Length: 393
Ligand code: NAD
Image 1: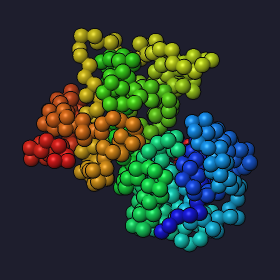
Image 2: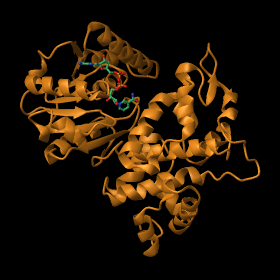
Image 3: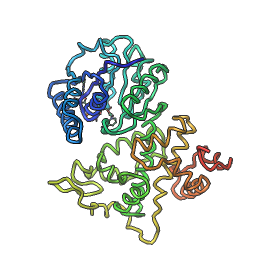
Image 4: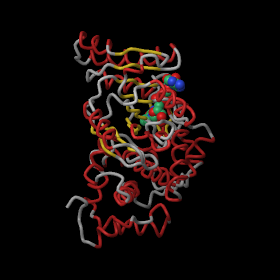
């Protein structure tokens, strides 16, 4: 189905940057929020981003044209013409239910509803409407106008036409649109969660300092260290996500105690100016590692070498679990991780580089030491038994 008339519900962090992504590709958009103040906030973000694009060379008349593609509203009176809605309201199931019911009432029967939810079930969201076949997950990454990945998640009842339309739209926005089957946290954040937890365990166990962990990860394949990233998103959000994954996947996702301690002490990261790092009150720039962590971690063990690969082994193991569950096409896994997180190399490429046999050997050793979070993925064992050297060979 060709999508022409779009609406975005929610003009917050995600909604406003999704709008910028849409208008930059020439799509007219209706932007809805609860009141004029919320809309003005969203428009201010859109204007700021367009201005910075003009500063970088976008012609002013093109920016003006893009801006003219945005219409705003606080009600659904114009929604009858819309053929694709992207919902980006807060992650509260009752709220999403209300929005979907309202959309169902006010939109054409053919219209597709896409949710930008990070964690809610697409099947459950679809069941709030009388068109579960036309409800799909469309998971953008923050900030949506820059991040190159969009995960397209069908619920149990979503039709293949709806999935195809969502993928085409993602591609029309210049993004890598990857089909991901429904699972908690979807693909990228599921794998990211295992790696961030491991960074926190390494810190907690005194295996390396905050700076050393982040530097090692950046030198290896990451654009930003795991602890700096935790500070950026906020440890409160991080803990909520970690608890959700733990509840959905069980013990291997158990949150490290240090994360709970950070939240208890309100060391939430950039927003409280203190987290794994301390931030300058004026400039908000990072000043250095937070000395208070010394009381929350085991003493730093300078004798034992720190292997950066250890951070990535849980991610690699989870990647094999994902493949085993057929969550995505194996060919899509590394490109999705690279586009979604800015990794220079995906976990399957890292695994091939280490060698699948050596990966399994290391994971088995760590399983003996740390238990469940390193239980080897059965598919990884099968690859080794079959003497495969790479997932792609
Ligand atoms: P946000 O709080 O920044 O924005 C939400 C917006 O929705 C606000 O402007 C709010 O006024 C508006 N809203 C609330 N009720 C509404 C209603 N009834 N009708 C219209 N608008 C309404 O939230 P966000 O960070 O943009 O997150 C939105 C969704 O995107 C959530 O499901 C979240 O899980 C998901 N998500 C967030 C991120 C992220 O990094 N922030 C990344 C990926 C996905």
